[in-house]
Length: 327
Image (cartoon, rainbow, N blue to C red; front, side, top):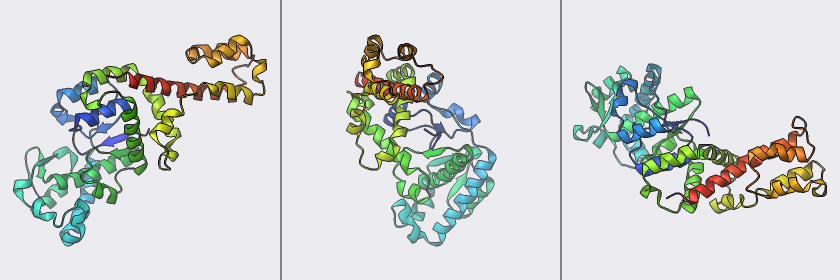
């Protein structure tokens, strides 16, 4: 999975989303300036310290400058054609709230924008400058943070992700999120709903941290396997189909052996037992299998690749098994 830039807040406000992330994401990067890292909660800091899930990203001046220019351009269009563009936020007149000082409830910190964005907001009664940053309406802040996240993602060759779907009409318009990643994330959630015997929201964070760290290599295999079916997900490939495809993965060894032209009849009995025994086909037995078949490691590329691919599938299946035991 490609790197993920998370926005609009320092950390996900929903524990449920964060718990899902512990079971699924390799890593995500919230936008948190260096001198604001003291504002993250103890619970989020625990996850950052104890796992590799979170990498705090401190924006550079150029990120905020370019995001400021794009945000000014976008808001100017709204100022000129308010009723035409308000539906991007599923409203009739967004300026009615954006220009109401009593609705300025979201702080965008100084390190995230340039002065021209602050001056623009003040000149158009869209916000108020404070010692820490710019106080504006949540929707306007989301607009700005969308462009900031896009700028960072472009420079970091990453994708953008958010857990806030209230403004999905605007994110779709701004081409901020990746539809393939969105589909894949929903697909993963569906798999977990099939496998995890308990509601994720009821499982303590500390238990999920321990589970993630204990199954980290299996989680990577799970994501590798999702990569392999990415194109199928939008074509009606179901969660059940994906899970079922791992029930007979050990037959892949037999298939690869036949592709080598050896035939199962020529396979020594000891090697055949290893091939058929799901408990035995672990990485430490691969050399023994190859040796029993008389295949030189350097020359059996197709078989070796098949064994490697099969190992990833076995790790994924093991992850499924462990998810079924998660409580």
